Image 1 (cartoon, rainbow, N blue to C red):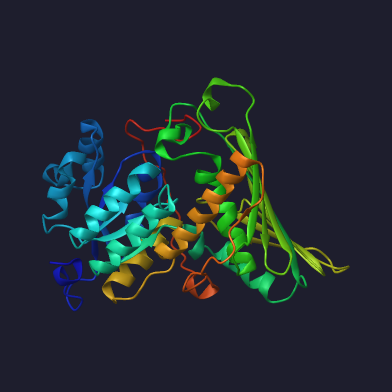
Image 2 (cartoon, one colour):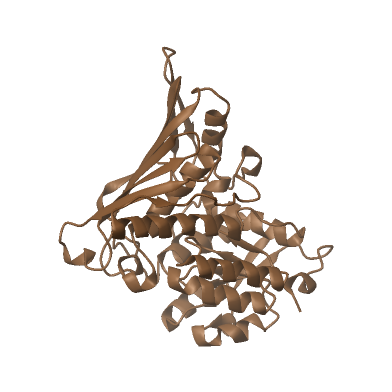
Length: 382
């Protein structure tokens, strides 16, 4: 029985989610977001940490019987108590947990990056298609007003022909979390560089044709397995360039700038989860214009959108194809780092749909950050 069969849209307008993985992001951002939706609810949790399961379940009114260890995941999938899973696990586990959900007829909302390899992404897409379930990748900025308005400004011609995109995304990461381990499929490009890659793609409305990257580390023990920082060049059709530098060892910043033949747009903090985001628009000799966007709950927007796709039987965007494209680019960048050469990515098929202002969803911000249970953010704060 598929999740669609479990639902009667005429009487039930809430999709029942299991949150799989109770790390920092799930506890700090995803779980509180359900309260800011009208069509989504969290009804089950999956974690091997008994304290997390007990305390987080109490916080969100979930029965102890609806919490599961990872080795009971298949039991949860066949329980009839959930319609969808939100996968917030380390990158290397995304494929396996997606395939098992799809085979059980459960819809999947998976965090980015979608997986570690192109082959894994393709298996995930095929499994969702063959089992008639929805698969979406949680690109929260595809619903964010500031980023969607940036797309609108650039493609309206206000800054002339967009010629190059430049982004910086940095933060301090401690060595104890999964992002600093090579065996989880993590790294600066995979975990934060993906934001820069995706932004360049949705700003230019195109896919790159070749890429180059390099990485560097300062010798600290925490960068034993992953690079401290990486820089990349992406060449797009029309001889447009996108460049970015991402780092796990520098002061916090998240910004991009799009330069056109008649002006430029600066967005900061472009990739923030919940913050005031500022646009600075400069056009020729005209006075500089500044716009500020209020904080919104971006994960609530993702849940609301995906639940609507399930309820209305619509194909979601960002889809698995969106996630696959970014992984193709990431793998090419990793190859470039290894070889020291440009790597071709020509011929990438574009996604069925690119983000537009029509996808904008504004949910109220989370008013109070929850107390985390046995979890720390990437900067090491509990």
